[in-house]
Image (cartoon, rainbow, N blue to C red; front, side, top):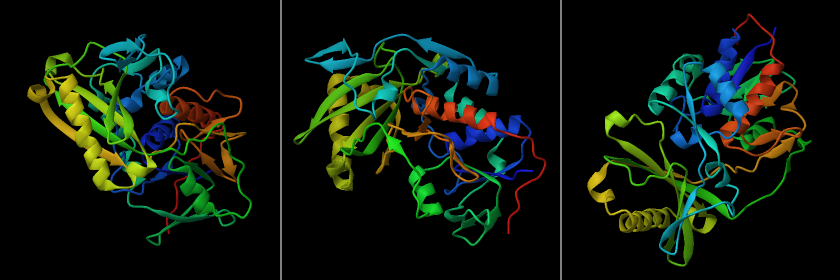
Length: 341
């Protein structure tokens, strides 16, 4: 009888935890930060595949989904024009057409996903190493967890470091893009909508000699009666900028200045804003693998890999769902719980 451990309590981890819970399979979740879930953004719940919507409806049957069939718009020479291609890999998941988004209140959706599984995760559990022979996960705080199956839903490089085998797992990436390293999330809550566009907006702006562009993504799940509209501006930064915090702050100020020029109503309609800087963004160009079991008993379930017989397109959530479904196909029904030492 298998003892399941889920490593990582982000979106991938809590989705997989709901899969196990629905199957009646006991598990222990381990999350490195102080809380499960991390920072959810409504842009993460954009999916492109019909099969992904079907999976989420089965898993979260009370959630309805709307389909948007509209090209992304780009600001070019003073006009907004439909944009069909020429996206970098990091941008592509947010510029697809068509795409689906959940109806109703986004924050309620996150809560519905989190609530059933949050108590099954231990927080501040940083993995030191995984001993494949002893079938044991060793944490930096001295705790140990025996396993027969690990579902790794965290950073892929951290998994490779934790296993630390002399023989490396064969990971093949279609393309590498080393130019982009960090990212900015500028989320605005407004009293009125800035634009009628439903799909993403590509907003070019300059900072010194750098030609940058922000992706504007609306929260289409918002409830109109609340008279609040949320939009997230996402900027991918080159390594040169992302490694200097002062430069990052200046980029944010430059973006806000240009947005106020383009959308003068921002100043009076802004209710709240939140800025999140990620010094290292995961690439959205996944590794190709023959199977999710990268090491004996250790499966990777997240958006950084795709199976060789599946398409590597769609959003990170599409990729995560594809891998959740593949993992689910091999599940058995254990009755034991994970032992901690």
